[in-house]
Length: 133
Figure 1 (cartoon, rainbow, N blue to C red):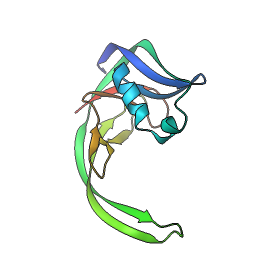
Figure 2 (figure 1 turned 90 degrees about the vertical axis):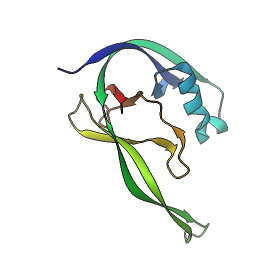
Figure 3 (figure 1 turned 120 degrees about the vertical axis):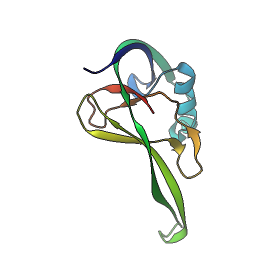
Figure 4 (figure 1 turned 180 degrees about the horizontal axis):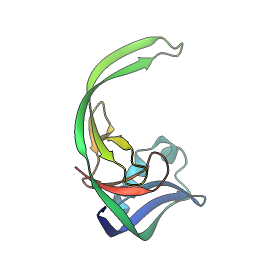
């Protein structure tokens, strides 16, 4: 049996379409402010709150290796830098698959760390879960 919890869920919304999901209103706005599309067009966004019963799962942090490659205007590599990639792996109660999400919004600089717990969406679009690690 999957643990469930009744929580407030905060959705960023523009033109009636949901874009992201958070556990607090502050996190929802903070997520938007980090997105280029918000900076280019900040008008018309809102944060809607719903009260939902959401499954709770427990994930684990997995360390991997990544490579950041920058290209010049002609598509040639100009910078290639290795970094440690930290991701949270979790078993989705909706689809049964193992999903992963970067622990950081910027995995190279390791800034904007995800809150523990976070609410994340099934990669197959079958629902969302609260994920602890």
